[in-house]
Amino acid sequence: MRLRADRDSFADAVTWTARALPARPSLPVLAGMRLEAEPGSSALRLSGFDYEVSARAEVEVSVEEPGALLISGRLLAEIVRNLPDAPVDVRAEGSRVLITCGSARFTLLTLPIEDYPSLPPMPEGSGSLSADSFAGAVRQVAPAASRDDTLPMLTGVDIAFSGETLTLAATDRYRVAVRKLWWKPQVADLETSALVPARTLHEVARSLTGGTNLDLALSAAAGDRTHGEGMIGFDNNGRRTTTRLIDSDFIAYESRFPREAAGRATVATAPLIEAVKRVALVADRNTPLRLSFSEGEVVLEAGSGEDAQAAEALAVEFSGDPVRVAFTPEYFLDGLGAVHSEHVRIDFTAPTKPVVLTDVPADEGQAPEFRYLVMPLRVA
Image (cartoon, rainbow, N blue to C red; front, side, top):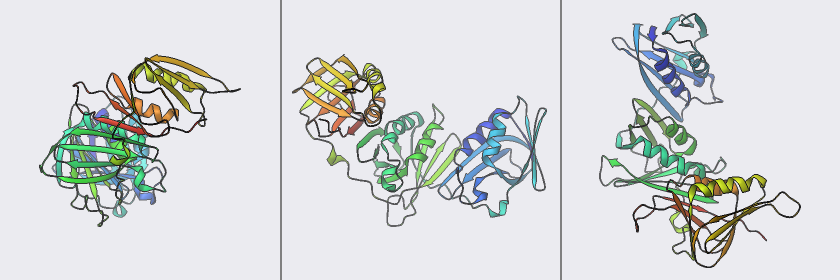
């Protein structure tokens, strides 16, 4: 293989592909990134795969000699991010690869490409939506997913497909985040779901190109948990990611949301977030954030006794009997930070029952797009 590439576009494609590489590969060859240039083509195809997640990107290059090689992906990504501003030349010489850019020269060893697994094919397309909308929805929901791998079901984000509606949901048992958004399905009556690893979905979302469309692709077994071979694919701006689904049913979370509220508060979102951050400065992991709601005011408090203490009051629209609740500051902030409207609506049932945070729709009577249920802490 011998080729020349623009430094910026080459570095961008390598960096994006390297994100899918495992930090601790089960086999040395899985740390590799495959580079392939086919005869008669002006595109260099880059790919990575660890048997769970695959990533494929293409970049326009000038191909002098076609070929394929396997090279340490993370090392290559580090190198290309620090190259000088000049064209990049890549030349394979036996078991070595010479990378030249301006006056910089690197010689790297190749990995045995014959031992590298074949990447799974992209599933059949299911529909598309705005990449910005999808990325925003993932950022709202993914923080609620569990980080405890002992319960795989809770480490995923459930994507429910129902006609023109996508519903993303995640939970770690102490909170539930749900976001609905519109998309364009290829099959109007599509009714299925896919439980996607939250870490992978987060990486997909953060690497999407703004102002573009995202194509979603589901394998035939995606909605059939009995096969255990479900797969979902994401195609954005010529870059494709596939991942195996979590082979489990997601919890029936709708029944956990209270049907009626005994009290409701409406607060300006940004000032409340800033107040929570300030008051929480004196709260460690075991110290709750306490909020007392009454007509026209909410008082935030943290700390007590001989510990450091903080308190702050904010104006609020409140209806119902005065209520005092306590939360883990991190959980409460995750919900507030995911609200995209100018004001946040907080619904209460009882001090020890779930509290629901939602955005405030622009049109009165319209259902909120985002809901966040969080369990209060019991305090004396």
